[in-house]
Amino acid sequence: EPYVEELEQVAGNPKDSLKEGALYVLANTQPNISPSARAFLIAHLTDTATSVQRRFLIGTALLRSPGGQATVDKVVEFAEHEPDIGVKAGIVMQLGAVQTPDIHVLTFIGASLDSADPYLLRAAVETTRKLAYGVRVQFVDKLAAIAENTQNTPDIRARTSAVLKDSQ
Image: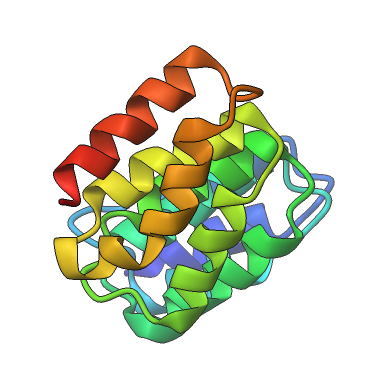
């Protein structure tokens, strides 16, 4: 993978006009992100010189790539502190595909279910729908409160009611 080193050099230079493109290519290598590219991308999750769009791309790409629990934990840790709600919601949505979510992932999903932001709340509700029944049931009380809260949008309440119905 000689191209990975070259792309990392470009992506690691904040003044290089091709930085964003190099990050995009590294995050989209197929069939999986190489171990060296994965480490590089994890390091760039919190790089404030990286655009919001690329941070979102990197986080979701890392979750789709088989990098193990350590990678998932790094992405969740990043998302917990990410100020952009769109990035945070995208990460939450991707967490629904994690085969065996650990306590860190479940705590983050649960915290997202407590969010006052409708975009993040909707993402968290949709994520619980993707979770296995045995995992999803631990969120039933939170989901019931969301479905009953008249301050939530009708769309969020309807989606939450559907998830609850699937959880019975």
